[in-house]
Length: 400
Image: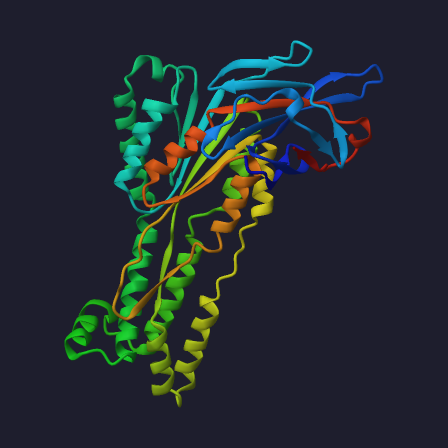
């Protein structure tokens, strides 16, 4: 079994993990001492894999816990499969809450037919009677009714959820798609003018895209469209933080599957920009507009993944990141720049820190099946931290 080092955050503590596993963590209050000081029992769900196989024969003594470098023996171990506790070790009558709540969050502007297959898998192979599930579309959340799994067939529930998701993706992504088309048209128009397009293409550009605007006007509209697209980026940090805060009070095991589609931004072809700079080297207004574009193209991330990571771990959520690949289109006069590079590393780190996995595929259904399988079985370790750490806001935890 391969040993890897990962960084995770536990409720109220910053933690690092050394282990074989994918780990999510949460802390729960325990009894109070006679002096009135609360003793906090820390629960650490641990998933251990040998390749793709979950290792289910480990014992309590196989795990070591270190808090700020201080060795601590785990108090108990529970092996959980699905919602059932199949093995327990350690003294006491502690009964962990193994109820399950699933969240599926989608950040995409285009419907993918493979998403329907993912929803089918959710109802046919993942959800059990008694599970809770919330769908979060680009427009709003929908909670599955408590008795739905008992009163309606899986196919009925899957079809209804697919219809909702398809509708909300198409509605919620409408403005983003419009801006993408506008940027593509303007990139083709400006790029065609600067790249020496054929008469036929110039005629098409003039009739479909330039709308009679002069070059300076097109630059202005292009700049405004770029800024609008940035304001419509798919990831809203504040909403993610608010969502994590809402989930704090939800009991049991919480698993979030975050579907995020690769984003592309239409930009002017670099060769066209160079040609324009040569053609208009004596026109300071055009040159200034071109230089402004270079500044707009410099994309610096404002996504605070550390803050979101702590918020999700604080809520005890296992976060699975499903990155939906899609190929860029080749458009005359435009360069389709991949602009997910500022988002991807942050979500990959959040998944690793909370015990989830990152899946990258053009088939989100297959990615979802692998991620959901990774969440089925786990060890739940519990331990009592030393009293000396009670006053600190963050503590470092290692599990070996």
